[in-house]
Every structure is written in C-alpha cells, then in structure tokens.
Length: 439
Image 1 (cartoon, one colour):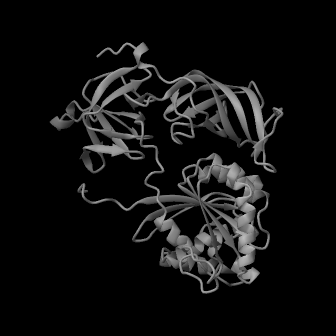
Image 2: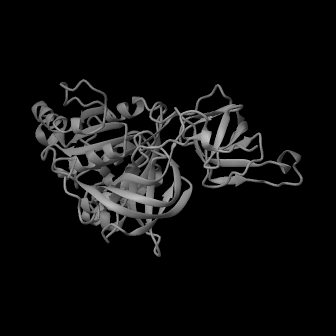
C-alpha cells in the first residue's frame, strides 16, 4: 500500500447494560440499517423467526446465536460482529447483561475503544448500569455512549431523558471517564440509531452511528514510549533466497509508542542496546510503525533476544518489579483466597505467581473500595490484591498503557482463566545505568 494512502480507521466497541435493555437488538438494528447483513443471513433470520417473536423477524438473533439465548431472550456468550461504513470499520462485541455473566462482559470490553451502556428508559439507572459503567472506567475505555433505549415507551419524554442523564451524572465524577455522550434511541424501531428520529426535535446531538463514525480515537493509544514485547524470532532460513538466508527478525505487536528505522533501542531485561535496521509489515518494509501495529523488527546487531523480552526506547522507560498491586476481576467459581498460586500471563511472558494479600473489594452501591479487606473474592467480584511473581516483569501501570499494564491469571493443572488484572503504576523504573551493555 502506498504511504500516501491511509487505511480506514478501525473502531472496536462493546454494548453493555442490564438484561433486556436491548443490546442485541441495537446491534441488529445497526447491522440492518447500515446494510451490513448478507442475503443468506437475512434468510436465516427469517427462518428463525418462529423460535422467538411469533413469526416476526427478531434483529437480536443476529448476535444471539445460541439456542438457549434465543429461547430465553437473553445474551449469554460474547458475540462479535463486523461491519463497515465508508468512513470507518467496526468490530462490535455484544456482551451479556446478567450479573452472572459479568466476566463475559469484561472479556468483550477489554479491547474496546468505546463502550455503549444501554439504559431502559422505563427503569432508569439500576445496579447493572452502575456496575458496567464502573467496569468500563476500570478497563480505561476512553469513550462512553449512554444510549437511553425504549424512549418510544415513554412517549419520547425529554424530561425522562434529562432525569436519567442526571442520574448518571451523579456518579460519573467518581469514575475516570472523560468523554461521555447521551443519546435517546429506540433500538427496535431504529430511531436515532442510523437515521435521525422525528420524535426527538429536542435532541440536537448526533445519531448513534454518526457518533461512532466521528468520535476521535487516534489518540487513544499510548504513543509516548516504545513498547514492543517480542512474540517470535523470525528466521525464514530460505537457502534459495539470498535476501532471507541470514534474516533474523523479531516479531510482535507494538504495545506503545512509535518505532522508526535508525532508532536506538534497549532489549529488556538484558539491557543490551542496538539500532532498528528495518521494519517489516505484511505490505513490505516501512520507515516507521506505531501502536497497535504488528510488525517484524530487524536490528543492526545479532544480540540475544527472544520471546518474552521487551524492546523499548532509550527514553521513558518502563517499570520493573516482581511484587505488584493490581485490580482483578475474579472469573472462577472457586473463590480467590490469599496464598493461592497461579500462572500469570503478561504480554508474551508466562511465569508463576502467588496472591499474597487481598486489599479491598469494590462495592457497587458506592462504586468505591470497601474499607475492610475481604476474606475472599467470589465469582464476578472486583477487588484490589497484592501478588508476587517468580521473576521480574517489565511493565507499565494500566492507567498509562492498557497493553503492558494488563495480565491474566490461569489455574495450575486446569489452565482455566480465573482472573483479568490491571497493574498499578511502577514504583521503580528500569535503570539502564546499572546494566552492562555488551555489544
């Protein structure tokens, strides 16, 4: 691709909210009204109409694919759908609303640029509304849309819309979300979803799709300090191709910053220094790349660097530690108790870890940490913990970098994922002056 051509921007977003707030119907309406449904999908939708809806096409079935979901009219698993407009590409995660499936919501929202919280206009803000908004804040999702749905059942009352907005604004200052947009909609009928509704002359903002197309996301990624976790050492060793015969590249996804040909870098934790010789993408060599592109770097020196190492710039260095404080969302039926050992996966690194203490648990009544340390964290609880790893990790605080500040815990023996975690900021930065740079 010529450098003058810019690819269409990709926006990842998720829907969340309580049960029966209309999340799946909203996504179905987005797909239908943006003409992103294939003919065979529409035919399958019509064939399934006798399962739910008494012969009427149910747009929610575009994402609720499980029979149990269609029979009960709820979302159980996370469903991903892809669509595009001339202005932007989208990946949408339809996440469950029931408290029992909070862990599924966290999974679907973990990579989102934007989160849509649906609120039933008849019910207003309820605990699940606060819970999912808090999780969006905890996951550092930069943009939030509060879609006040089923406004047609409230006669498109501006007073009701304003009342629910005030309910949200009463607790938003306690959260770390700076970009919030409130939109009155009817997902079932399509009002203010893709086309502007004539029922809301008092609403002067954009439609939901209009906001999704125009919200600024270019600055969502951390572009300050280079972070490149090495996932794979790329050695083609093709004897018939002289250009590849001695090729040794380091492949992975850029997790922060910008990398340029000629840039000086550090390989951590060894501390060896080198310079970027070439940058390769699937479209060939490029002069620079940035987060979150997946690339292969070729260095000037044949230094020891393998999976699990971190390539960083020589300025704005990451932290290094083997003891951490973190927030976790607990995802397993067996509760988390202090002293339990797990495997921890952080970027391309895997190591053993032990939870040394439970500091606090989040109360969704107040959206604050409880003062007394809990005895355990149960399924879907969110809490603050201390943990210790078997080897030091090179990391950033999650508030600084979502990719190098996140981790998961898996259970020994079963390999079940039991927790998703967000690391606190490092107390000690990597100190290159104490390292032997042998090249």
